[in-house]
Length: 220
Ligand code: SAM
Image (cartoon, rainbow, N blue to C red; front, side, top):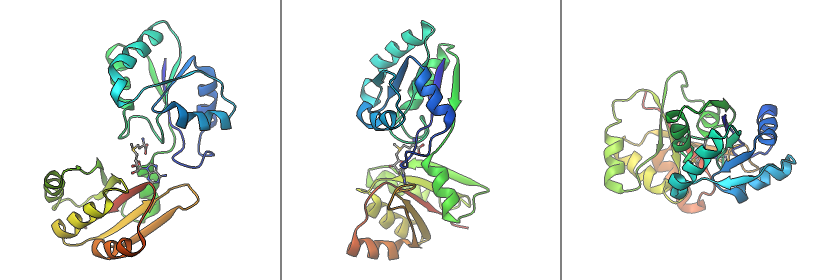
């Protein structure tokens, strides 16, 4: 059985009993970064062996993990934060296991987009999650241009290195809407910043911005 196990997005307390029990019981834990996951495993006294499974070894490691699964062993899949498969390399292993008729189950838990949406105060009855905006300026603007008629709440993952460029494009392409940045969720410096894209750009030009963040807005 392949167990897809959600892990915390910051606060180590945000893990379910079932996730801890599963991580203890399986034969192997496939991690995006074994050093990162070790912090969580040490915290809960989990001694299960780990192996790395990330974007650049997904083919060779995927086959190896498939062999272990076909021997009838339990393998847990975790990524650096949140729910495996949500904008991270996890989904490739899930796809491979499914194609090979390996039984799969999920131990659900934290995911940054849902935590951010519930905290944002934006309409949440209908929303659209777009992962990361394209890195290349032309592709990013084109993506935003395609969204102008959309009335659902937008959710994007964003990196500290690109947030200002994304806000500039959102300001220019989408007529400077109100945006929400939910950063460092569940961590010491958790913060929700709201304002027009242009206001936030002014603020960040003075004070900067750090950490992991989710960007949300609604054009309704
Ligand atoms: N699988 C993860 C999940 O379920 O949320 C997402 C993985 S994706 C590679 C990483 C992105 O998630 C970050 O760049 C950031 O946009 C968002 N993220 C992860 N942890 C976060 C946190 N504590 N606060 C805000 N955003 C976070």
